[in-house]
Amino acid sequence: MRILVLIPARGGSKRLPDKNVRLLGGSPLIVWSINIAQDVPEVCDILVSTDSEEIAEISKNSGAIVPWLRPIEMATDSASLTDVCLHALEWYENNKGKVDGLLLLQPTSPFRSRDSILRGIEIFRLHKHCSVIGVSPAKSHPMWCFKIEGETMHPFIEGEGLYMRSQDLPSAYVINGAFYLIKPENLREHGSFFTNNMVPLVIDALEECIDIDTQIDWRLAEEVLAKYALRIVTPNQKK
Image 1 (tube, rainbow, N blue to C red):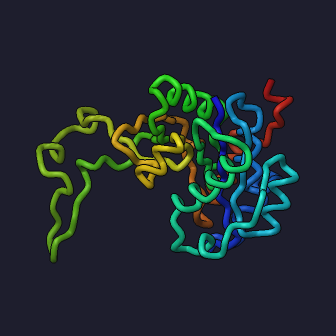
Image 2: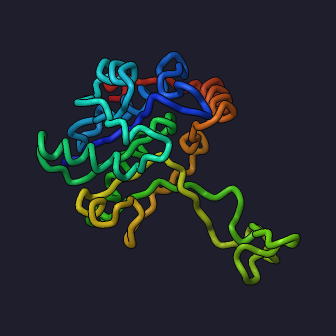
């Protein structure tokens, strides 16, 4: 099985400027995602899609391929992530050959583990290459959420859930942003990683679910680094 890893990394970021090259634990943020995928047997290449010369240089030095700088129209805040994925996929399959899956690893999830990646790929294999999405237990249960209409609030989901004990509520999960894997033809057909045959990759470890988009997220990541002594591990050290 051939899986192409795609890491999208724009140079601009309004909420956390230059976050993809900012040092986390002594390494640029994007390097964490490049490094964790490097020794996965099914991965044929790690491609970074960026509009930044600096990110491109760091990525190449870390073992990723950066065959071009992303077109301007795909480097704006309003650019579709699906379009970015399809652009990279089309170039790769035209120049490097067909792949069985496209694995999207967002650089804002630096603490995803190699074990989670391997589990996700195995799920992809076992379920005949359905779309596999990383999820984690929801912190706020949807049955205890509300919507506001005018000046009053109402349960977001109608029913008896609001009156149930927390331990009696059905399990609920949220997308954590750490893992998206799909067949190229399914991405082209649906225009999204979210299809009718999605399969979950459940990730329980809280550190793996950190999604860095703000300064508060960054401080949390630094606290996790200090507490768990997480670090960049080279492929040779993993074996």
